[in-house]
Image 1 (cartoon, rainbow, N blue to C red):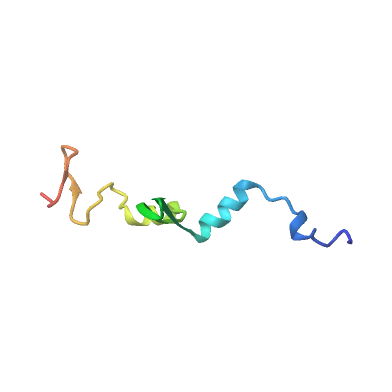
Image 2 (cartoon, rainbow, N blue to C red; image 1 turned 90 degrees about the vertical axis):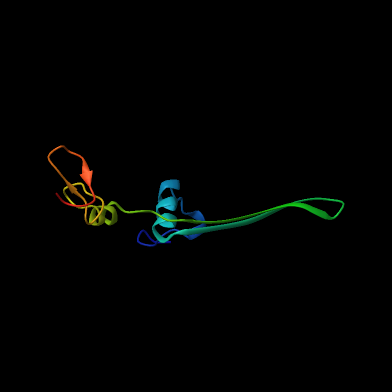
Length: 87
């Protein structure tokens, strides 16, 4: 192996944070099934389906107006309260 070649994949060390970053940037789907049975009779069945994905800050910033109102028709009035209809 020369100095410019990467080590084989099996010998590479990967930090846990790098692995989590790669998984969350693309998204992860977790699925699982648990069955509790006695004498071959199913008593409890639990099914798990979860989608885990990273949420980037720039996505949130684009949906919230700069004046702090969360609803399109809501505005801040002098008393500091939010109202659904402008006064």
